[in-house]
Length: 237
View 1 (cartoon, one colour):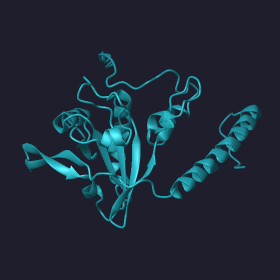
View 2 (cartoon, helix red, strand yellow; view 1 turned 60 degrees about the vertical axis):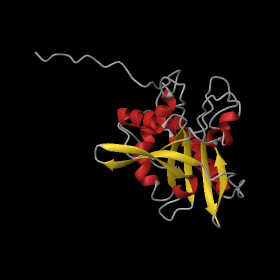
View 3 (cartoon, rainbow, N blue to C red; view 1 turned 120 degrees about the vertical axis):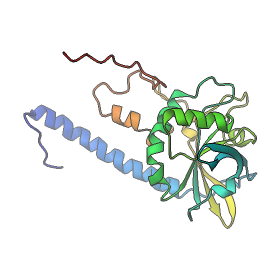
View 4 (cartoon, one colour; view 1 turned 180 degrees about the horizontal axis):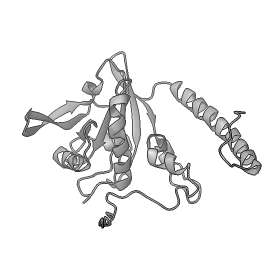
């Protein structure tokens, strides 16, 4: 056990904290056991189509135009792994999913680090111009945004249901011998959660909940929103 003390803490606090540390240590070990088991998964099914997505490219500093982008071309930088997050922003949705948006707010900052080891893309069903407009509103600069409006990727990889409702799935693909295979998906989303819990299938990439889990208030009934009330500044006298 680490010999750590903080100012004015009681013996009762230290005993409770030591017991919690035992659980935290086991969680660390379990997290690595699960990750190691995930890494040993056999290849999943070969991707049935070299999906054609749409993205934007700048003609000059003021003009952007829509260009096609095949899934196979997303394997860049010498990396044979591709992570795709399905962003819940369908063409019939007035605004994007606030929870997905919270995830992508964080991933935008992490994308330059992630792409040192794997490719990362975000796919939504809306037209690419609509996706890019929202990205500009949020200030996203690093996410590779793609539209799946003209292909079946969302349906095939459970980013939408049979009724066309959008779903927040993460999928990992690998390239082996020139062929693209599915590797892993956040299938925990489809596993009924314990009472009063959300599915937590992508919590590992969502800083919000990990920080709130450190606090005595915990997660509570909070869910992120696209906007929050702006505090009125107190005038200086």
